[in-house]
Length: 223
Image (cartoon, rainbow, N blue to C red; front, side):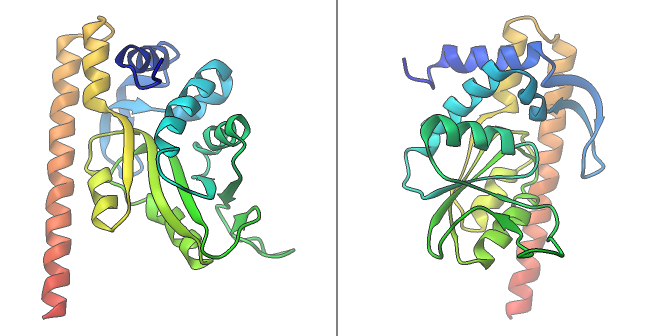
């Protein structure tokens, strides 16, 4: 069976919601925005069968393009990247949150060589800004980011932001699809559906406006 069969993806979404990895309420995001939903894929470590399923789904995307190394964004994506590395026997590297002031003082753990291609894996993407915190140190040591793959797109324009910087970026699923599946199976009501959809439209529009202003500033500076 193709892992991207609609029923398989639907099962994944329902299972993630069942254990509250996908949850609804009022949640403050890193950007200080209050969101009506929250996705915490760090909880996957408690559910090996779900961690395995998510890693299989990601692998079906990763394997379509040649690469040398897998890099998990700390900390949420590290278990996912490790699961993929173990299941498919592919080398793994990971970024530290801070540079060591002892030993070799490395920011990146693992063995790598200049010019190798890296797949960056993360759990979710919002506005996309945090992805560059991982991409930058990877490129600084001479590695090349061949693709950025995330489990879920929150719908705030992040995938397009990363693409606009010249990187191949893919999300396995997105909040619109998640909401559609959960509403279809009676996991959320109509009011929740509408609230979440309005939030997606609002935050996506705000991101597009920021990107447009940023682009205009660059063009003005060039002139």
